[in-house]
Length: 56
Image: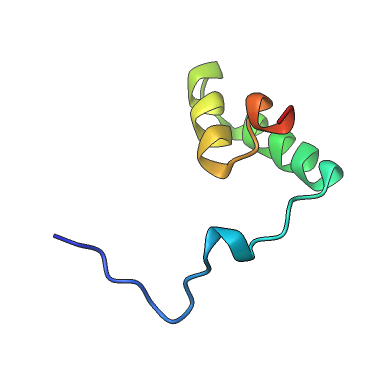
């Protein structure tokens, strides 16, 4: 089943880059609530703020 987009969908090109401090704060929150390191890495990757994404 295909997922329908809504009027609120934002194209990737329209997104502003995340400030470094905001990304660090989000990483801390995710790390605090993740059950283990693998889950933490997965969630950070899904949010686009994983350790590999910051170096690019």
